[in-house]
Length: 105
Image 1 (tube, rainbow, N blue to C red):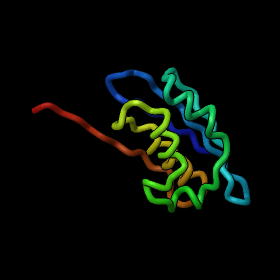
Image 2 (tube, helix red, strand yellow):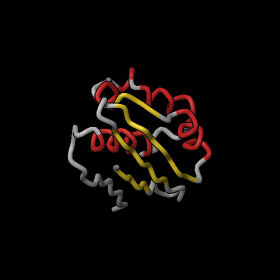
Image 3 (cartoon, helix red, strand yellow):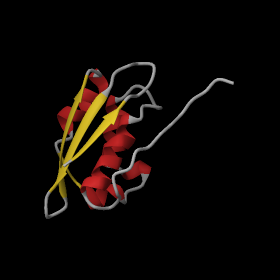
Image 4 (cartoon, one colour):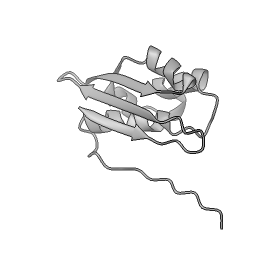
C-alpha cells in the first residue's frame, strides 16, 4: 500500500490518500480530508485501472475529469498526488516525495 500525505498550502485542508494495487492493475483508493471538494472526489473514486490512468492525457484522465467537476481551485495539488500514489502503487514509479516551494522575494 502507498500512503500520500498532501499539505496543499494556505487552505490548510490536508489530505491523506491511500492506494493499494492488486495483481490485475486495479487500484483501490481511499482519501481522508477536511476539504468538501476533495471529499466529493473521494466519494466517487473508489477503484481505477492504474496503468490506464497513469498513461492518459490531462484531458482524458478520469481523475482530472473528476477534479474538473468537483474541485473549485485549479492549483489544488491533490489530483496530481492521487496519480502519483497510483504510479507508486502500480509499480510504474518509485515512491518519492514531490515538492513545490513558493517564496516571495
